[in-house]
Length: 558
Image (cartoon, rainbow, N blue to C red; front, top):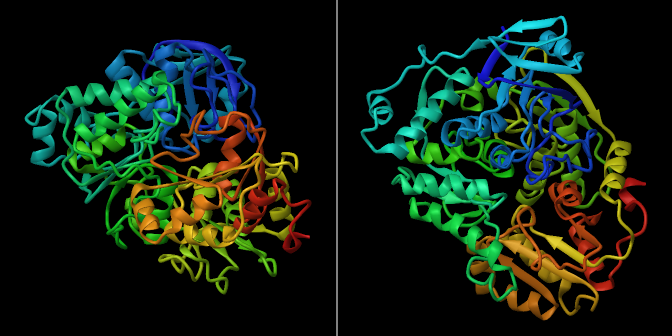
């Protein structure tokens, strides 16, 4: 049955997206234009159109981008999906409930979606979706079957104040959408919405803080958009630095820890296997599920705070064991003598092959990937897939779990890896900036890069910047690593990461950047408008020293 998820009376020209789109990093929040250089609909405008796409993908911050589009008048008239989708749906719910800026969200079956996709113009309203001779009635969701505890009902009735009441109302709406029968307790939360992706993020956070919102479980915070203690000295304009700081302060005011890292699994006491948590930020969610064996949905921005304010989350998705089984098995042809650039390429390709389902990667049983290798896989996977986790046979905690019945098969060959490498390397050989730390650099990566730069310096024309979390920075300082890196001309910056960095911390004169991150190689062309080169960590160190990227494919891909 076709479902009306978020009601609104709208109509518009149809824009059919052939694959999912991450609104964060893929859509300009000021205009609604698609800026993801790897997306088939790049250059198209979403504003005022009825946008059909299978589901969203990528960053949890997409909900904040959609809210900004709703507030500035550049949102789609409607979003129509035929697979499960939470991130954009949550943004639409917040736009309608908190700011009275509704846009319609509809979910159709595959056949219904195919019929709608044939229409040049669609209208939603009057109980249905229609265009020309096409008409489908739309059913609204009902929360009558959702089981709530006495404490849940007390929150709904406002016993803990208006912020917790709003949070519980939003959680219940999302639980019904996800088909959950009840809510569950979570032990900790990670907030993604503290990135100043747009003024909408600040409006939401300060509105909830002003309502007296306080988190009920330990809550960490993602990287923010400025180096909190030093942004004025770095030349960041007040017009950006002040609201970005205010956004961070709003979450701290609500009781969140100012951890300011996109890699919360690097903090002391990471989640344990089987622990039910409420995390947002795509790489963190995928790593927690896949590598740590913890359990969390990929919660959208804004829902992460609702979970923190209540300590509750919908019992759905990969919180349930049966939903953690792989539905696609990907056989990997492992090249000989590969370097660390293999892992982000693998993750990116695995996401392309599994945009809507959890994969199991085979053929890596003897490869012994490090923690850093696995998080490179997870981060790149999150740019091309909507799935909240993956498995690696013989490596990850649930890698030996039998795939779901009917799981299909795919393959990644060395030729596929070479094509992905060439796709990431669209820039010229001359490198102006080496960008490291997306996700935030680990202590071990910091050690490795310090060794690669030992006794050498960056070329005069090259900036080399590492972004990392505050806790990692403190440990690196304690080992003398920061002094060694700075003596080599490498800048080390906390709190921000490449997905939230802005000029002038991002060197404005940069024309070509080089990175070892599959995530940043994917998003950088749209986020910063520069050409990109990609390679392993040793390649990045060599580029920092010489000012040039390696020529041609690496030996292990030839």
